[in-house]
Length: 395
Image (cartoon, rainbow, N blue to C red; front, top):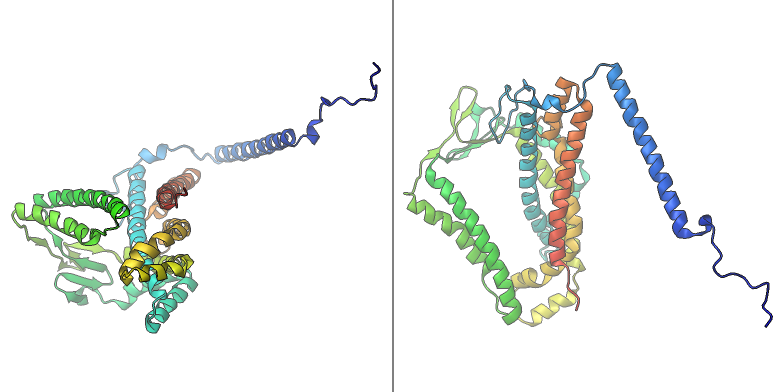
């Protein structure tokens, strides 16, 4: 039998430049090599410049005495402590303003977003005005305004405003009385933590019960009773301690009580109002993304307006709200670094002081980048976990 000598070999090897998979691998190796060469050049050049100028490198400065004071601290600190402890103080201050700011922003932003859709003309217009004003003014200008408000428009401590007994407002900040130290307070805090766990368990049980039977359990009132009742019970067992640590004017400032500095108050108010305006728009868009037929169906079942919002609209709107809401939480945390402009000792401010004193600019900037990267990754991880819980499960 005669064979065709012109028969083509189907197993012919394809040149790598015509093979998409091999060509893509080649390009990736090339890009990786260029990045490696660029990194080597930058690092070697930096090390050479540091050696030429006799600048020490490394993080050994963290164990040296800081020799500077920090105005606000959640932990004990003095100028005799190390730079490492000073940076920890800065991290805690950033966490404090970020955590309180996120909680207040969620509450205020949700309220404004819902009010934006109110049938009441005045409420809707006031909410729209709030959103337009605070969205359009740069956050840094808002911080300067609130900082000037506390220092220029409020009186001195001797003429402090006293709207309520034990509460004083002056250009030194807001000072108010707090319960005096007592062993019962520690156990009240533990009771509150236990109540939070019970509320979480109760909420999960109520959701499962509602899904199976359709009956609504009064989670809100029961949770409030637990959160208030358990600490009050511990307080009564502890002997009803009522002693208060009240602020008193001593010299040029108040002594005792709890003092919220003008810097902290200005930073917190500025961050909350600015970010809440964006959160309100996110909430409004999320609610409007839910089909109006859902509302009509809920009304046809005889549900009250509060139940329609809490049980029908918001659970569906959350699936639209959560992703952009995560970005706003990250923005608030990163915008807290603007505290250096008004003198609040956040991490950037403390790290900047350490850099100026030690000359360890590269290490200091690297620490700032690492800390804010960790904040962002932690926030994203928590919100992504919550977002997965809220995703619709398709059958």
